[in-house]
Amino acid sequence: KMSALDKDLIDTLGGVKSSNPYAIFDGEIGNRQILLNDAQSKGLNNIVEAAHLHNVFLSFWMDDYEEAVKSSDIAMSFPSAKMPGVKLVYHIFYRGIIAYQLHRQGKGEKWLDEGNKMLDQVETWVKNSKPLFENKLVLLKAEQDASMCNFLPAKESYELSIKLARDNGYINEQGLAYERMGKYLMSIVEVPEAESCFLNAHRCYLQWGAKAKADKLWEDWNLGSSTGRLEPCTTSIKHKRNE
Image (cartoon, rainbow, N blue to C red; front, top):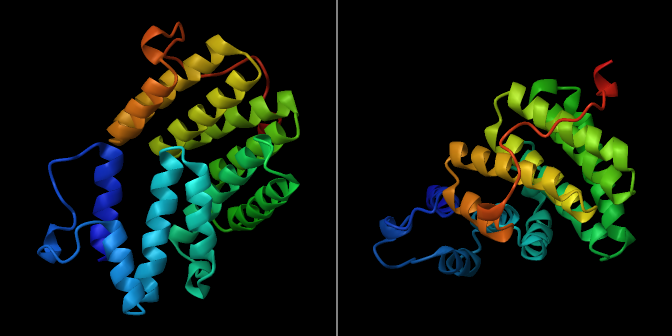
């Protein structure tokens, strides 16, 4: 059941419609919701948690942040959700981005506090593995600065997160940092620079294999008529954290 959820996530992001990850259940379970209902009826909490995490990750990447946070809240209610592991890392990372975005959308100061909590958690992990966590921490700091209307520090951190993700080979997180920077620049009406970020995010997502995500980004921001350029979103601002 775990492997079916993983394949469902990969196929959905990749825009693969030719295969059914739930076919292995011979018609008894046809989709994630039926799998979730079955697990709940049988008290299989590990599957219930995994199904909600699946929805967190998919909703996050497809920009449905309110749906993502609903599933995140449920997943967080399970003690096992706080066990160290890769899924916890990404759950905390994505929840931090979601929280800062909800704050900027006027959903309340509690979301700024929640974003700061997630940032603090990632900051503790950086000490254990800088190459794995640093770009995530810097992106969360960019989101924090954006939420506090700190224009130059936000731009600096977005750019640094892009560079760190690229240098460490995280093409999906490089795309995410480009996308988040693009959305921030669009919110402050720096349209050409924002479009350049979106185009670079689109390229990263295609290289990652997430065609459905790339297509959604293209359609949401009408990139077919964009005047942005395919090049890194850099400025003359010096990255002080590298000094």
